[in-house]
Length: 204
Image 1 (cartoon, rainbow, N blue to C red):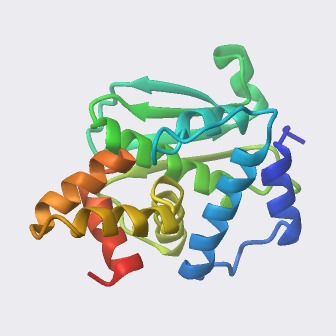
Image 2: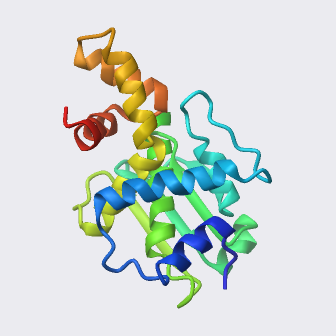
C-alpha cells in the first residue's frame, strides 16, 4: 500500500474507505475545514496561515506529493495527478501532481486543491495502488468533479475565515467586484471560485 499521512488515513478510516455516495456539499465543506485544522494543529508540520492564506503546497507535500509545473499542449488541461510505484524512477516519488504553468497562480492553487480532493475521495488505497486523474476546464462536470471543486473551494477558502473576510470587506465597500477582488487576494483564489463561494456560503 502506498504511504498515506495520518490525517488522511484517519479521515478515510472514519468513512470505512468508502466515499461512493458521499456528496453532501455542506458536509464536505465542514470536512475540509476540519482536515485543515488537523494539519495546522500538528506541531510536527509547523504549518501556519499567511494571514488567511492556506499553505496548500506545503499541505500537498505533507500528503506525500511532489508538485511540478509544466506547459501542457492542451490549454484546457489544468492539472493531472498520478499515484503509482511506476512513477518513482522518473519523479523520485510514487505520488505526483503536475500543474499547468500557463494558468494564473490562483488557478494553479485551486487545481492543486481539486486534485487533492480526488486523492482523498477517489483513490482507493485499500483496493489498489494506482490512480490518475486529469482536470480540464472544459470537461463535463459530473458528481465527482463537483465534489472535488467543492472540497477545493472549501480548503482554499475555509468557510468561517471566508465569512469573516467578507464581513470585513463589505463593511467598508459596496462594490461587489471590488469585494470579489479583495477576497481573491486574501485567499489566493480565482475570482470565479470566489463568486461561487459567495453564493455557497453567504447567498450573495
